[in-house]
Length: 257
Image (tube, rainbow, N blue to C red; front, side, top):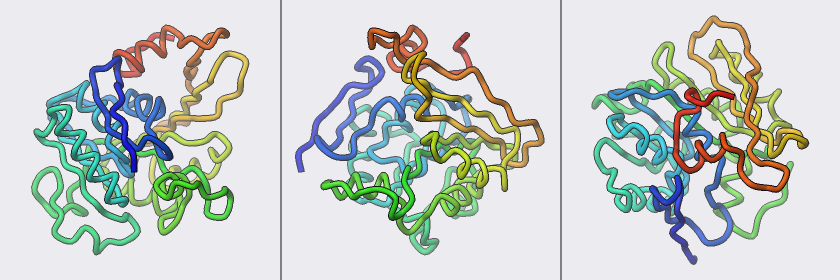
């Protein structure tokens, strides 16, 4: 397999990733930007791939504890290489594990030194496989197929696992395809409240193909549909807001629409 090393956050991060197939992009950066994390808090990235979103969070808040989970061993290995490449080894762990198999976590330790499955996090972020099994064609890249099409863990299993890893009042942030928003909401509503939907529009004239949905474990607040983000101008150039997020890696909550 051929690999490239690409710059993210205007070159502040260097990310090794496959030259073809599954490649990280703006989704990972936007997901990271959606999390309001503070020094001393913990974050788990479920399905972290080569670690891009988790690295973006760690870049913004170096004094947090970050874990990544990735069941494709080659990607998990590369995520660890990216941690080294970006000199972020302090309080940053990537585990090879299939979330559908609890035995895969035997012996794994969480952020405070307890058994992983009993050691909750302040924040969980995830970019689940977009397509239900049988609803999309497989890619020539096995890595891409596994990243984009549900297999052992369907969306219900995925969201249940994520919310189970949260502390009470912890936050779950998910980036997902708009066409499956109703499925995602149904699963998140089972264990999260104070839900917020953030549409991601490619431009002002095109419908949003992606959304970020955030929820609070045990939250009681009402559902909110936020203004969302327009990512490109008519000429294809990034909007000023997109520039701040994708180049500067700022927290989405600091952006004034």
